[in-house]
Amino acid sequence: MTGFPAFFGDKTHTFALSNELVGELENKCGPIAALSSRVFNRQFSQADLSDTIRLALIGGGQTPKRAAELIAAYVANRPLAETYPLAAKILERLWVGNPPEAQSSEAANEPA
Image (cartoon, rainbow, N blue to C red; front, side):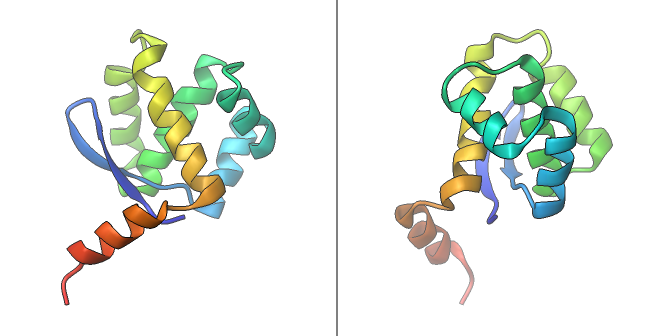
Protein backbone atom coordinates (compact mmCIF):
# COMPACT_ATOMS: atom_id res chain seq x y z
CA MET A 1 0.00 0.00 0.00
CA THR A 2 1.23 3.45 -0.86
CA GLY A 3 1.07 5.80 2.07
CA PHE A 4 -1.15 8.83 2.05
CA PRO A 5 -1.00 12.04 4.06
CA ALA A 6 -3.82 13.12 6.36
CA PHE A 7 -4.16 15.57 9.21
CA PHE A 8 -4.38 13.76 12.52
CA GLY A 9 -4.25 15.38 15.94
CA ASP A 10 -1.38 17.79 15.77
CA LYS A 11 -0.25 17.82 12.12
CA THR A 12 -0.28 15.93 8.85
CA HIS A 13 1.00 12.37 9.17
CA THR A 14 1.54 9.59 6.64
CA PHE A 15 -0.62 6.47 6.96
CA ALA A 16 0.18 3.10 5.36
CA LEU A 17 -0.46 -0.58 6.07
CA SER A 18 2.16 -3.05 4.81
CA ASN A 19 1.42 -6.77 4.57
CA GLU A 20 3.24 -7.30 7.88
CA LEU A 21 1.14 -4.65 9.58
CA VAL A 22 -2.06 -6.11 8.12
CA GLY A 23 -1.03 -9.37 9.80
CA GLU A 24 -0.59 -7.55 13.11
CA LEU A 25 -3.96 -5.84 12.64
CA GLU A 26 -5.55 -9.24 12.02
CA ASN A 27 -3.96 -10.57 15.23
CA LYS A 28 -5.60 -7.70 17.12
CA CYS A 29 -8.96 -7.39 15.33
CA GLY A 30 -9.59 -10.56 13.33
CA PRO A 31 -9.53 -11.16 9.58
CA ILE A 32 -8.99 -7.99 7.53
CA ALA A 33 -12.14 -8.60 5.47
CA ALA A 34 -14.26 -8.92 8.61
CA LEU A 35 -12.64 -5.83 10.16
CA SER A 36 -13.18 -3.82 6.99
CA SER A 37 -16.79 -4.98 6.77
CA ARG A 38 -17.39 -3.92 10.39
CA VAL A 39 -15.87 -0.50 9.79
CA PHE A 40 -17.54 0.13 6.42
CA ASN A 41 -20.91 -0.97 7.84
CA ARG A 42 -20.44 1.02 11.07
CA GLN A 43 -20.50 -2.12 13.24
CA PHE A 44 -16.97 -1.56 14.59
CA SER A 45 -15.43 -1.55 18.04
CA GLN A 46 -13.22 1.21 19.43
CA ALA A 47 -10.24 -1.16 19.08
CA ASP A 48 -11.00 -1.59 15.37
CA LEU A 49 -10.51 2.14 14.86
CA SER A 50 -7.59 2.74 17.22
CA ASP A 51 -5.57 -0.30 16.11
CA THR A 52 -6.11 0.53 12.43
CA ILE A 53 -4.90 4.10 12.92
CA ARG A 54 -2.01 3.12 15.23
CA LEU A 55 -0.63 0.50 12.87
CA ALA A 56 -1.06 2.78 9.83
CA LEU A 57 0.93 5.48 11.68
CA ILE A 58 3.71 2.93 12.21
CA GLY A 59 3.52 1.97 8.52
CA GLY A 60 3.77 5.64 7.67
CA GLY A 61 7.03 6.03 9.57
CA GLN A 62 6.16 6.70 13.21
CA THR A 63 7.84 4.68 15.93
CA PRO A 64 5.53 2.32 17.81
CA LYS A 65 5.96 4.48 20.92
CA ARG A 66 5.05 7.70 19.11
CA ALA A 67 2.08 6.01 17.41
CA ALA A 68 0.80 4.85 20.81
CA GLU A 69 1.24 8.38 22.19
CA LEU A 70 -0.75 9.83 19.29
CA ILE A 71 -3.53 7.30 19.83
CA ALA A 72 -3.64 8.10 23.55
CA ALA A 73 -3.83 11.82 22.81
CA TYR A 74 -6.12 11.92 19.79
CA VAL A 75 -8.22 8.71 19.73
CA ALA A 76 -8.79 7.58 23.31
CA ASN A 77 -11.62 9.54 24.93
CA ARG A 78 -12.43 11.41 21.71
CA PRO A 79 -15.73 11.20 19.83
CA LEU A 80 -15.87 8.36 17.32
CA ALA A 81 -16.93 10.86 14.66
CA GLU A 82 -13.41 12.30 14.81
CA THR A 83 -11.56 9.01 14.25
CA TYR A 84 -13.95 6.91 12.19
CA PRO A 85 -13.34 8.74 8.86
CA LEU A 86 -9.58 8.25 9.10
CA ALA A 87 -9.80 4.55 9.96
CA ALA A 88 -12.29 4.03 7.12
CA LYS A 89 -9.98 5.85 4.67
CA ILE A 90 -7.01 3.72 5.74
CA LEU A 91 -8.97 0.54 5.08
CA GLU A 92 -10.43 1.89 1.85
CA ARG A 93 -6.92 2.63 0.56
CA LEU A 94 -5.87 -0.88 1.56
CA TRP A 95 -8.72 -2.35 -0.51
CA VAL A 96 -8.70 -0.14 -3.61
CA GLY A 97 -5.35 1.68 -3.55
CA ASN A 98 -4.91 5.35 -4.21
CA PRO A 99 -7.61 6.99 -6.33
CA PRO A 100 -6.36 8.14 -9.77
CA GLU A 101 -6.52 11.83 -8.82
CA ALA A 102 -4.37 11.16 -5.72
CA GLN A 103 -1.84 9.25 -7.82
CA SER A 104 -1.53 12.09 -10.33
CA SER A 105 -1.22 14.78 -7.64
CA GLU A 106 1.35 12.69 -5.75
CA ALA A 107 3.36 12.21 -8.96
CA ALA A 108 3.25 15.95 -9.60
CA ASN A 109 4.78 16.58 -6.17
CA GLU A 110 7.68 14.14 -6.69
CA PRO A 111 11.05 15.70 -7.58
CA ALA A 112 12.16 15.15 -11.18
